Amino acid sequence: MISCCIFDLDGVIVDTAKYHYLAWVELAQKLGFEFTPEQGELTKGVSRMASLDIVLRAGGMEDRFSEEEKLRMAAEKNECYLRFISRMTADEVLPGVDRFLKELRDEGIKVVLGSASKNARVILDRCRLTPQFDRIVDGTLVSKAKPDPEVFAKGAELVGIAPRACVVFEDAAAGIEAATRAGMRSVGVGGSPLLDKATLQLKSFEGFTFEQLLRHIDR
Ligand code: BG6
Ligand code: MG
Image (cartoon, rainbow, N blue to C red; front, top):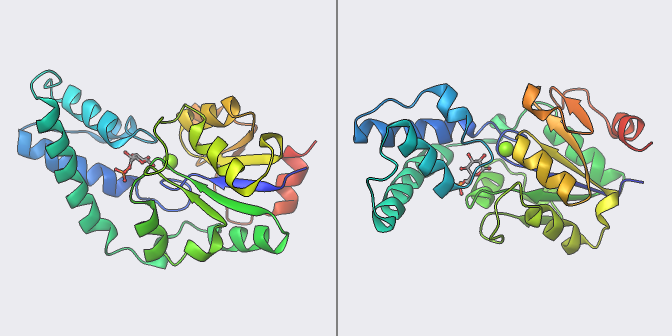
């Protein structure tokens, strides 16, 4: 039985990965090096400070800065990222997502957000999606980053559903691992070969129904 669906945000509900990437590129440019799209891939699903380490490593600067300087750089990147997301609209919700969330709610399924981002609420508000969620667990509420299961375990606990009745939707390998470690089944969204450990793989939510989810997952 499935009673709760838990959604990652960046890359599952909205394509904000491009904004994270552009904001990191701006920081890298200021520091005087290039940050490629391939290197940007490595920051998906990773916390803000761990992403900064990836960026600095790409520029060969991993040991150059103090913790204080790093916190300042992360804050600067976030200001840039906020400039991008403050202009977002509901048009940027990925195809089929809104309809699928509504269908889940009509079926009486609990809908929960499980995101590493501290900006999750701003994005959901901008995209007018906040009322679709029973609970929102974001980067301000958890201390351990994916692949630690904390974010998903907390989401299930808040709606009072056992992990075995939860399904997690994720676009990052670390998120699929977190779901498995939480004792939940998972759907890998977006078609990356890195998601092969997911219970089910899905290219997009377009045309995807709750009935199909049950058919593939609830066996
Ligand atoms: C994840 C993104 O959802 O959130 C990562 O995939 C990002 O790229 C992380 O670094 C933290 O986000 P924020 O908005 O708190 O900097
Ligand atoms: Mg993601």
